[in-house]
Image 1: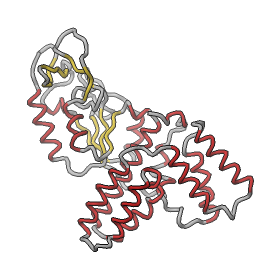
Image 2 (image 1 turned 135 degrees about the horizontal axis):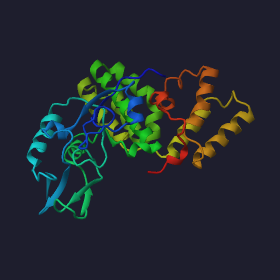
Image 3 (image 1 turned 180 degrees about the vertical axis):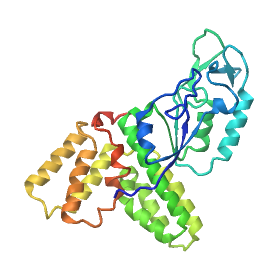
Image 4 (image 1 turned 30 degrees about the vertical axis):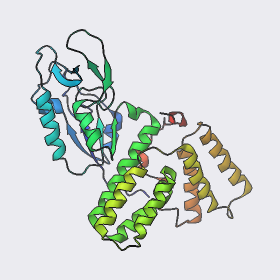
Length: 322
C-alpha cells in the first residue's frame, strides 16, 4: 500500500490555477492545492479559449424554442457556435483521462446546476442543467469520475471521486503493459474494493480475468475496463463496506482476544450509525495486518484506495448521505 499511479485530471482553470473568471478572479481551492502533489492537472477555461477576455461580461445560457444558446450579457454576443466548436475540438484531442473537476454553476463548465434563462436581462431562471463544456464532458466521458468543486465538499462524494481516479490511473498502467499477468495482479489487489462497490460486477470481472475462452489480451482488457467503470460508477453502500470489514476480521479470528474483537465490532456499530468515518474501522484492521503479517490483506486497495494525505482531519461519517 502507498504506491499510487498518477491520475490525469482535466479541471477548470479558474479553480486554483489562474485568475480567469469573468470578474478577473481566481477561486482558491485547498482540495485542489493538496491534490496537485499526486495528480497531473490539465486546466482549461473554455470561455478564454473562445476569445472572451479577462475580465469580461459574463455569459448566460438562454433557452429559446427548446434550443440553448450561450449569450454574453452587455454585448449580447452569441458565442454558441464558437463554444460548441471548441468543446468538440478539445474533447476530440484530449486523450485518456481519469476524471474531470469542473467549476459548479458555470455556464461553460457546470455539470448539473447551471441556471438557464429565457433571455438576457433581469428575468427569472426557468430551469437548471449542464453548461456547454460540462454537459459534453458528462456525455462523452461519463465512464470516468466527473465532479464539481461544490459537490466535493461532501466527504462521501470526495472519497468516491478519489477512489475512482486513482483506480483508473492504475488500470491505465495495466493497459499500457498489455499483459495478462498485470491484469491478474490488478484484479487480485482490488478484490475487496470491488466487493464493496459491486459484488456481482466483481464476480463478472473475475470471469473476464479467468479468460477460459483464451481470447486475445486486447479484447480482455477492453471488456475488463468497461465492466470496471460500470462496477465503480456508484459509491459503495455502508452496508457493503461493513461486509468487507467483517470478511477481513475473519482472517484474525483465531489471533484476537475477546476484548479486541468486541472493540472492533463496537467500532463497526459506530460506523453503521454514522458516528465515525470508514477510516476508523479500516485503521484497526490495518494495524492487525501489520501486527500479524497478513500477506493477502496487505496489498488490498480497499484499505488505502488513495493517498492517506488526502484524508482531512475534519472528515466524519456525517457526510455519508448525498
